[in-house]
Image 1 (cartoon, rainbow, N blue to C red):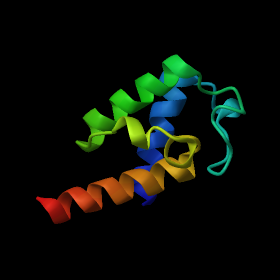
Image 2: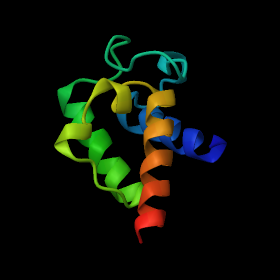
Image 3: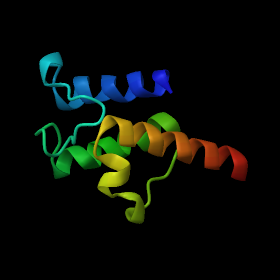
Image 4: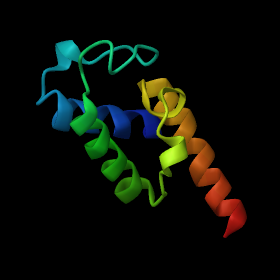
Length: 88
């Protein structure tokens, strides 16, 4: 899980914050409310998740409980990758 969190935080830092480490929110902070991500950023985030972790993010899954916050993202990706392994 720690590697998963580091990978997601690295994407946020490099792609959304352009390297500004001081703006990296705490894992439980909202990415939207902290101003880190907007609607375009969410699309970039989904594309990153699908490519990096070989998952499919469905429209129904594009909710704050899954995508708004590093902790939520880690839990979501862990669940998706685990479910994909069980199904495959």
